[in-house]
Length: 119
Length: 119
DNA sequence: CAGCATCCTTATCGATACTG
DNA sequence: CAGTATCGATAAGGATGCTG
Image (tube, rainbow over all chains, first blue to last red; front, top):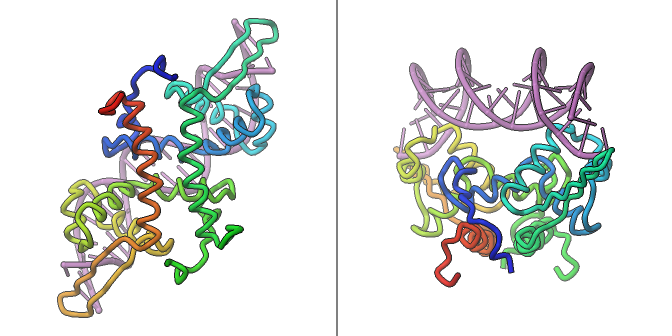
């Protein structure tokens, strides 16, 4: 499955040395959940496409976020060394697992907002 | 169940006007997941007890966090107007639902860290 | 096209001191 | 006991300009 993905020290990302908090901290970074959502909805996307969907984001921050998600094995970065270069980002196995967990949070968020269909 | 809890605009907490991101942003605040974890493990706790478990936190930040969690209906604040005052915090229904979702993230975090028993 | 380097501004957090 | 008020440091994000 994703046995190829290397072990991760998520505590690194938490001031509390707590893996869950590390993961939540990564997710809470600017635009992060939106990036993941876009990639799930529309499949692999290029840097410029992503940026176009987030007009208010700076290239610096988008780059930082993508790097972090790549380092944590959530995204895959595929680069073609053409001129001009073409870089495509997509969800890895981890990224897809993560979406399952986010769906649960999403359901709660909607429920608490009083917006569920079934409530 | 928790039908008494008022609807929440979680988008307020997200720069992106996204409910999930709002919720994740709340959770990622300093010490937040730890506070929730403590309250689940040990039941209702007083302000001073919580603070004792987090020596590095300032009263200011702890107060801010507790207020936010109270406003979002995740914690309940019970005050006894005695002298000296006694204030007790506990998880609400929402707080307990939330833990279910956090458990899923927790499981992922541990799995990715290569620390699962079953992996 | 997909970024990196730099500067600057703001928001956040920690520390300290004080109070109902 | 359970906070509030104030101050200062730090770091994170936005804007701009440049490059392989």
